[in-house]
Length: 290
Image (cartoon, rainbow, N blue to C red; front, side):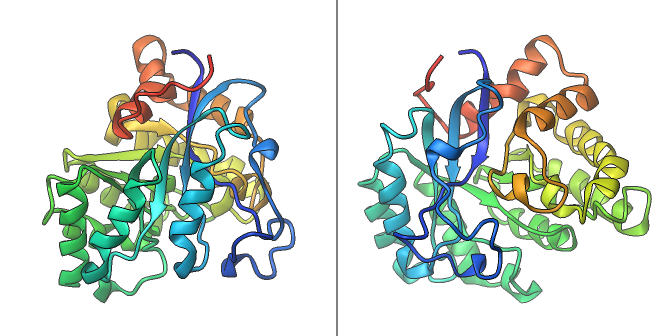
């Protein structure tokens, strides 16, 4: 397979499902469908859908809808569906239902808005162990201040494959050289020491307030995350449409060029970063369109 695997893409249809978090975000609060995707000028040959924050009661409906988008989204090879990991008593039935969707290989429960106490909740640990037992991965979407709590949690479930979304949402406006930036770097290094972890080089544009701080500070965060995880545990993601329209914005092609330049990846390392890590992590046997 050649080309780029977009390891983190969203689509949604606001006429079909409810997305409470989109209220007031006029640029995003509208149907954004596979036909609208940023395919990086044709470089994207496969893509991973990541749950997009629909109403909790509609998480199965979202997965079913995306699972039926074959004609509209031929590059789709895997689905990361939503699940409530704080309710282990209902989780198994939900996962059973997701089994019927097809291509569901991972789960995301958004942790970025949760309190520190949630990371120590036995229910969350029990749910993560169930994911591992069923061969599902976990997308960890946290902010930089939550990274130490995430690492402590994951030490209790070493058998689980976990990918850190968006480099752990570092303090892009502040910069890598600040106290917050140093804390992020140390936390990323500690997380990367866990062998079942990986990172998505994605989402930094949405963490910046604008292009000035993004241009000044993004490269240092990419460089450190890639050095900590290496090419065999790093993957590219567009975070479309959020990173296209929020914060610094920008195209996926520009982001790919930036990551390639900063990492200096060539040859087999480039192949891992561009596609092989994502396909291996998400256990995809389908390679999309060449």
